[in-house]
Image (cartoon, rainbow, N blue to C red; front, side, top):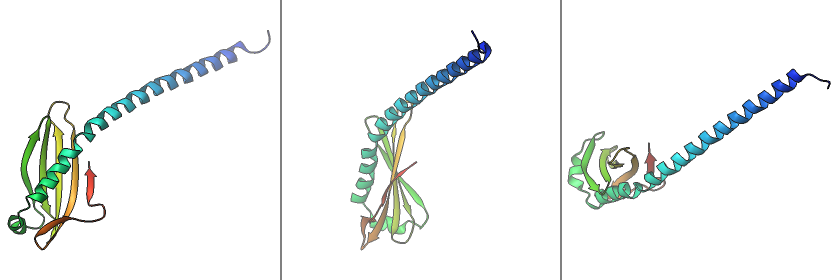
Length: 140
């Protein structure tokens, strides 16, 4: 037998360590991907409640009180609860005739997941209308 057994041993040990590192990394990535899918599934169930809160506020829009709201202030609308979800809403006046509505829908049991969505609203002739072109936004 010719050659260097020490070099072969080092090469085999290096190959084994690389293979085990790849296996551990693959298991971690698979676990993380499964957790992300579970989180996304829970978050998707909260989006309709947040959108419903914004649409409900637009339907019950009080032009007199919103006109009296100073520019730059945010007012919290009383929250609503539906099943496991609790939804809060904030109305911020960002300009003379522009408002930013932000709704946050949270799951009450632990772990607490929340989803926020916002909409820019322009008031024309005392009627609120959602601004065109990307007025809805998902918020962190």
